[in-house]
Figure (cartoon, one colour):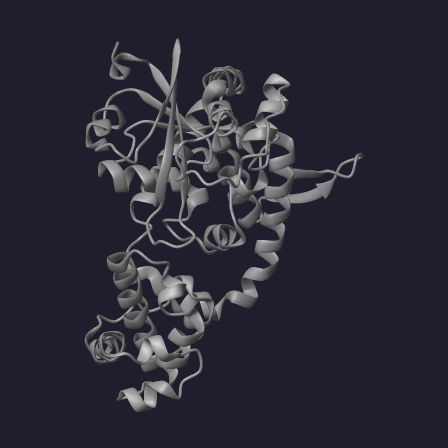
Length: 366
């Protein structure tokens, strides 16, 4: 029997990353049509596992984001065909459910929670640990079948698959060092040379953390990145005086890396200029965004969808602004939102309340 001959396979992983940049994988759980296995990744080279991920087999997972990073690290690839049961559950009205909640709703089974925070790198694993790990995939294919049936009946199977494909695409580019400054809230508000300093420092920190395999904030806290970016020290003595910097950061190799990142900041390519319309029409957008937000909420209730799947406020603003790449202008979101919103924004329709307090989109006459 080869797993590559299966139609679908359920997979989960157990890992730690509290003290490392990359996830440390302690266990891989695999279930197929008539079998289940727990794989110990510690003594194994799992490159051969990539043939399963890169096959036509549907890889069924729940909340797959960090698990995908595990496979990218261990196998240098991600699934070609992914079905994320958490994503799919959003299309039947569940709001980012836990695996336990999905088991309870679909199968009436309550999963044990005792070993959730256990040490998966310890050996040998106890029977309790193994039983906990087995439960994560034991019924996942049955849940998959149930979700497929419900999504097919609702006509939303392609919607769910499109979102799973987007998840794969998003996870493939998540660790780009050049974008890491965007994850520092205070850095996003910096201007001019200070922003470029933060861009360069954050990229250096991301790459260096990966090289040392330590968490990025343990290597250099966000506070230090922002403070250094603002003050731009020219030497180690000046670096010592900056808030968030401690003795680790002023040692030769670390300090040299920080100061070199500041020097490199001057050579960064400019960021794309913000769309001037976004600032100029932000006040004018408020009425349109308010109306469309109300209709999006109504559509989520009407279609029994997780509202976060339909879109964020930024997605709504992009739609109201008429941006060509607005998420709500394409795919399944456009099927639900696009046409009615176009009429609303063009003044061809108006919102009103029905007798139950819900919203109606009515054609405007005259």
